Length: 274
Image (cartoon, rainbow, N blue to C red; front, top):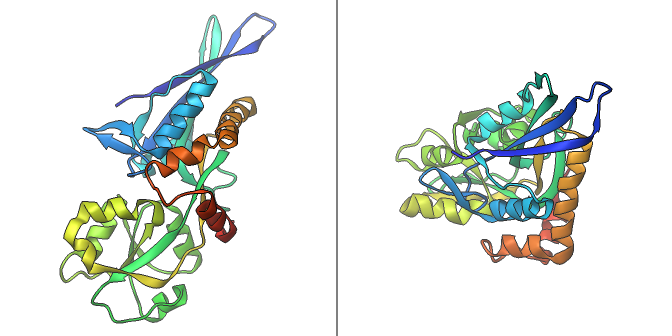
């Protein structure tokens, strides 16, 4: 497991000549093609490539801590304690990549992005003849969806007072629905990783069909702990903006998802609810 330690020395000193430094730990969770791992190590993926390009522009290391989404979310909220010594103060901060920015999360973190837009389709079992045109239909038919813990879709279900079964990963959520004689009816799947997820479950993907509706598109950001200095946030936003100006960001995404181009992004952005 690798950890990205970014140490930035601020220009100012205290009246006692105490040096102030900032340490940033960056984490990601596995989610092909966003983040692709081999033997537990981050190897590639368009989010990985974008992050590395941003770090290169800032002249920083691009090492990453691989974790689960739930653990990364909790650590980001908890932050890190500062360290004090006789010759300086080290303020420690966290950042996590692949975070949907929602009204509920807005005040919890600081944000850099958007890195891209994504949409979500709810899938039901193929043999299920019921027709679902909206979330209210899920409630009418007492449908029970499986959803990965803490992801943005759980916020939507909670707002609608819809029950769901939480899982530790998206793969687990999907497998619970496609298993024979499943007691679960549905699961949400993001557009950007549908192909990879279906490839992983192979023939079982035939057990799923999309419902007649999908959620509004969502903007995906890099989230930072609230303790992170605004100057550091601005640096990372500048790096991302530079990739936008040159077209490098879109090129890195389309290398993995060929359908994702400027036209599709504009369509998703226009469909984004928040």
